[in-house]
Image (cartoon, rainbow, N blue to C red; front, side):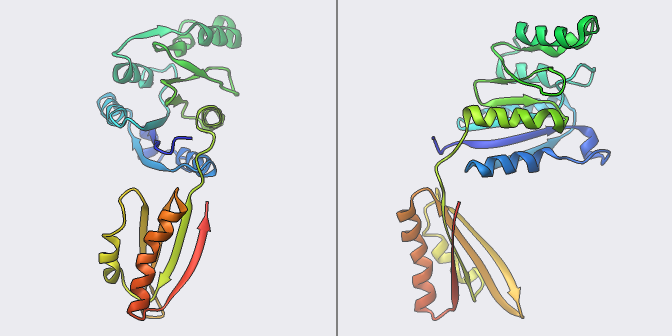
Length: 251
């Protein structure tokens, strides 16, 4: 599996920002990604504003390694803008009625499919479908990496699983080294500067029993490279007689 994938979530809903509803999409997507060895690079919670939606979509599209999961705005009401904005951002505004999505809606709702529900099958051109286990109104995706799902978790969660299982089932396993040192972050900055940028370095300062501590984590896909660079910190700590505790985590 190609490790160079940057996952983004776009959660659309003014009702989330004004507190009328609580978001459940971020935590679910994050959980599913981590189970498969992936991580999110960014997450956007935005209101139903077409200009803002477009700018966020374009920003994510500009990343050649991006994979996006978008939640919300693909219903039939006048404030459901996602399909049109997605077409503007990803297919030069070109849209079409997706025949299979259209037939699913007709089968589900019969004569009540018209005049409004049928519009939920009007997608950017060349869209592929995501199954809706609740009411058979499909979600959709473009280029096998831009996924659009409803705002209802009961509908979107199965679509997330479907998309990941089909296209991004599992990444290579990451290897992580962790230590807790009896010093401050400032003492380790010069060591940090030696670490290659493609490795994931994180430090978390703590104060325990009125003493400074720092939890240092280094991870990557190449075990030997992680070990070699992690040794820079160990050498520094031992040379300066700083106490530390090691903990190795593989995930």
